[in-house]
Length: 435
Image 1: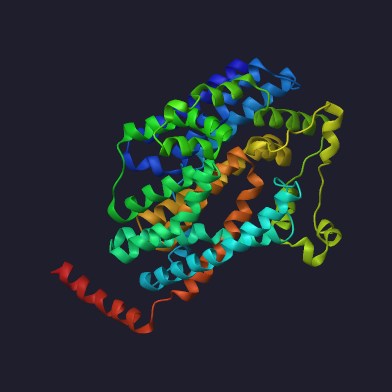
Image 2: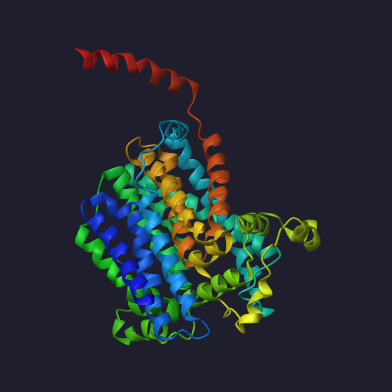
């Protein structure tokens, strides 16, 4: 059955890509970029898992591939319903774009002020040998430093719409910390989100879309780029900038995946098998637990109090009965963690996610609400991470965007005089069209 589910999965993803090829702007829509992530990240691991199952039983492999089909399919099905007009009305948020630009500048300055503190905190963590286990002050600083992604989206859209030297310079300055993560840290999702953000900026404000064949070629290229960048991290981009791509071992990354020594999809298969075998499911509590983990500072209220706020219905030691431990630095994927919450019904998470993105797309493109455009750009990375890392992170990311974009909206409210001028101009426009 594994091969059958694998080909069904491939067919679903290719079908969505084909849908995207029918109209140029669809390359920026949720189903297209999600199918690209499924194909580039999940598909190579699926082949590797079948060839190198390791501790995963045949039934577990069938289950994870079937769940992969459901999750990919929901990214399409959730996008089909027409948007709810009442929901779209709530997304109609009016702001003064020039005030918003100044807020973006202020956010950028704030994040640059945090750079030194974040670097010092990371050095302390690395010196303690806990580079992959951030805790304490570094998590708080990193939390606020993430505002740079919102700041970049704000100044980018303004610079594309008003391409003056000052605006372009601010967009470059705001992009630097993100590019530092991409090229210095080798962050793959950050790289994809950055280039999509730039593309969306030109689409929203200039209606420019790349050639569809180029978009398809990039999807195919990511099958090779994701594993090789993951293997070499910043070294890959250093070679690229020096025009020494001949030094890159292009087969290394994909070969490591196919070899199957460490597979996130195997993690998902075995965790799903453990949940099925033990009957332990989170029933949605995992989303609450992760929210508490992300937003409640244990160093302030105490770790015991923080743990008391969490349900922890799933015993993380259940893998011991399967003689398996998650490799350090690997994930259990959104396929695995959504199943651990609601069994196969967990795939409905991607249906809901697609439905939300459909409203954001319409509000941002047809209704041209700039705040929703910024929100859409900000949630692209969170959506892709819901496949590669886990679905439990999406809700906290939405809340993060809502909090700081909400602050930006408050600080960017149109003045009363502009609002009155705008309302007075409406009858004149209507009468002109009537004549």
